[in-house]
Length: 197
Image 1 (cartoon, rainbow, N blue to C red):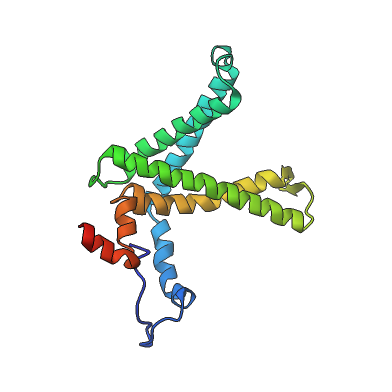
Image 2: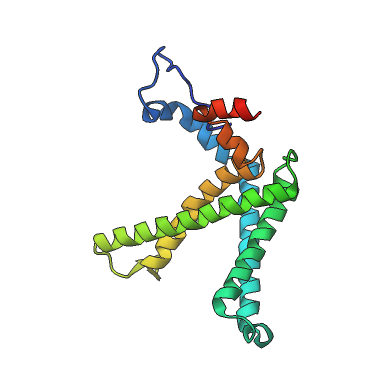
């Protein structure tokens, strides 16, 4: 486990003063965590889920038989749920081999981690957008002969960052022993774990 790989003693025989002191020693293992077939497959499945999300959404808000029945925001919500289910299904069936919990329990955790990703994406994108305003950047930037809005670039940046959060969260929680087991393994909660085990 990447997060549990914290050396208590530095190579010089001293305890690290902080996480920042121990970070250089952990960085290669952290990078290797992402340089795997599993991460590449996770990205491909995420892309497939995004395509499903966009196709379902477009069908729901453009086809009169659906568009007349539901508002735009609801169509987007249904499309997002379809993408989430495709992402979970592909990763559960083909990418992560954990079968220590039921698929339903893993799906519940997957949804919680995904909702955390939605919130994190919104926070990061808003922060980058605010930083661009603070730096007095124009509303659009020319990149490779394309005019791209700062809003779009902030969104893309946030999605890129959250991809790493999502992979870590789904690896450690969704397709693993789950959120409750993870929390109970925290050192501060060790007495609770012994009490309820």
